[in-house]
Amino acid sequence: MMKSVRLHFVFLIILTSFLTACNSPKSAPSESIPETPTPTRTKVVNVDDANGCLNYLKGKNFYGGNVRLEYTYDGNAAVYNRQTNELVFTGYVEGGERYGNASRRIKVAATTGSEVLKLMLSEDGNLMDETDATMYKTTP
Image 1 (cartoon, one colour):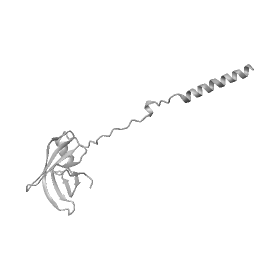
Image 2 (image 1 turned 30 degrees about the horizontal axis):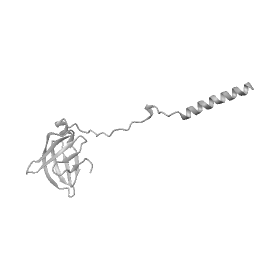
Image 3 (image 1 turned 180 degrees about the horizontal axis):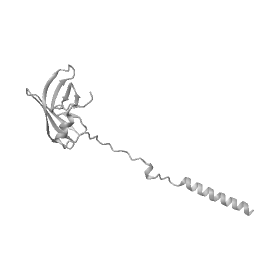
Image 4 (image 1 turned 120 degrees about the vertical axis):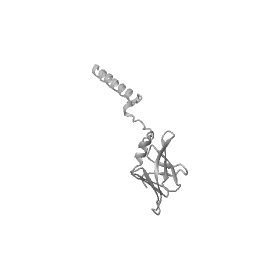
């Protein structure tokens, strides 16, 4: 009889501990919960450095709307019509002042004629035309 009482007692202790464990609130360890990453801008060019911005442009082509901008290694640029591939004008590139927190003004002025292309270079490496907000990217 004493043996069966002990077995019942042991059984009740095991059952109580099992039920207590099942009913206790689950709290996951803090390291198992991944943090949601906050979106960040990819910073390709340091717009604080005017010369660095001009160096970034060298040798690159930018595409936007019907225009292809081709920056040469000598500090000049050529503007082409993308549909006909005709040269619209060539010009020299000038770095301007900072614009906002994440961009710098860039100007392409024609070497002959009066054409001027006013652009903003952003930290992500893209250009935007100041007059009509056309975006120029390095991929067509």
